[in-house]
Length: 418
Length: 168
Image 1 (cartoon, rainbow over the protein chains, first blue to last red):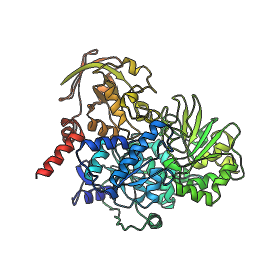
Image 2: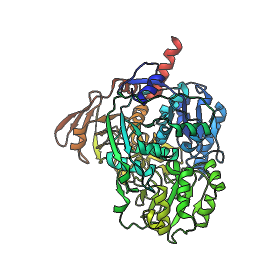
Image 3: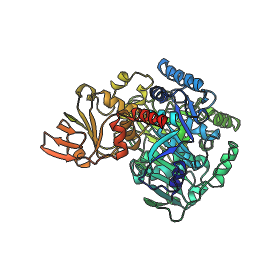
Image 4: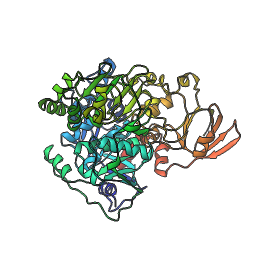
């Protein structure tokens, strides 16, 4: 069996499951942010169940429109907060957490072999720690918090093998953009993406979270990584819970196997209006920018900020551009502050602010005007994603983002360092 | 059940950000959301759509976020069924869960044009293009999914399941 099949078999009381089979799986963890929570709560109430299945396994938090951008969004946060209190759930308030997909691993909630359901499409991020995690809508999550179970179809797995050594300034974001550019936005539709190979072994946990995060942009149900010493160290450092791991089977059946030589991969840019519209930086051409955004559940972790700081140190943001940097969690923010990264950003004249998903989904903290061009470390560049429908979003790594912020146009980090 | 209406035709990768942009989801009122359905790619959709109409699109309809508001606003706008070559997985679940009929049919999705008059028989998945005089048959939905749809969505399905669990 594949890793995904092993996890799903264990959670559905079966010895073996295969791709395409419908199962009911027990859930280890289920969560929602305030964007989905009011709908989740409304549907939960309709079920006639008074309590969630296990308050220790249900998490609610405020991160999307936070700190509340207006009265309407404040009301959504209030509904979320009140339900969390009523049910005694695990709850993260503004100032005590950050972006869900950054804080849940950081707070030790995510472990290998878990089945996790979240009311957010980027729930697939937790595959980086060997969990089966997938995004669903409000009604599915309402049923999940009531029953502790969810129906699903066992997905086939596509194995992606990354050979070779990563060039300087090429990281997890470039690998996943290159992959989505290759297979397309529905290239892994309904499948699990398994990421493996020498380059993955070399990648930091933060780089792996970035890759896992964007599996959904290829249409995948989830991502999955083998749990190695780096993942084990991460889990140990961020919690004290016990867990088990599975080995990869030699005879596991894969839908497809796709291989890349990463030594030839340049920094990648996804052009508007699809994450699959990817070009290597050498073919990007001359694109002037109005805004650079660094942060979000894709690239708002400490490694991302370190890379940005390495390039921004002693430099100034281009005078005709604004740069917004948002750490993904309070912990990332504090760690970055203690390392001196925040000082580097502010001296470079970047705006630095409290954790929020706001800018990524065009809610607040970096909304674009008509026809503006933004290079962003986020995960989507659909029409209107970050603001006006005529604005244009280019997706790239924190290295490309920092370098481009300095020169005011899309550039390779090498142009700043050489 | 036979439904008759006009087709509103789109291409591939119609994503949840254009079905209902997140910038309108700060409020909790579904009628407010519905005013903005499809507006980032089709500003006239809301003024043009009539009760019973269909959205027809090609591959990967509904890709992007998990927001259930996407099928909700389509349903509230008056659309009776979405026909697509394929659906993104979260949208597929959400549509079934909230009771928005969806049909997968590559041939129909490709052959139908904006404004074509269609007649759809949902149970059999039979699509008739009255404008072009052509008939198509949809790929049947998995049995398990049909059971949820037959109950009118996941909440009713689960309620019944919970009741029978209590009794047994």
